Image (cartoon, rainbow, N blue to C red; front, side):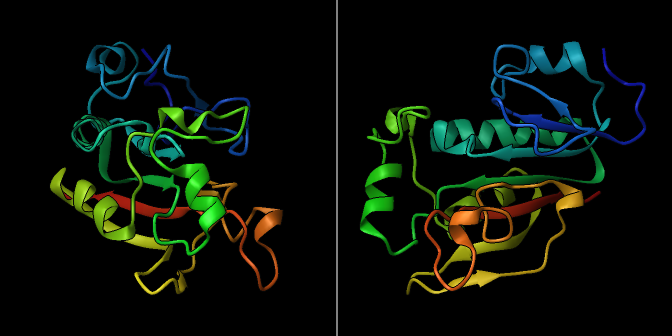
Length: 187
């Protein structure tokens, strides 16, 4: 059981990326969002300061996403948070939407065939609020295709597929955005 760190930060579904040095990087095989026994074997309740999930939640159904958020909430400290990034359903680009749609096609190294939902900022906020979190929107598109960006710091969790860090999204154009939120556990 991992509990020696006072500021325990966990990346869910890290893949081969290590964008967040000093964070515990996990994969589904050792920490499954939907299997609380894997959480109990690694952590005490209310022991994690932060969880980062970049392009993970879209691989869960709505109901599974809600269940996963509730499980995460049990293991996050009061005032801790989940930084969650998913493909943005309101990004006004047909090629992007075909790539991230439910069932695929997606890139070769990340088959979108396993995508079960496409989120917009309202739907992702709804799931995390229903699980008891307070949500802050960081990067997202609205219904009219307008991009919104609120200040956020990579020290609190780097999301590579973002306006802030992805070279494809620098300058005036955005090629591959993410809908990014921080969901805080209050109380």
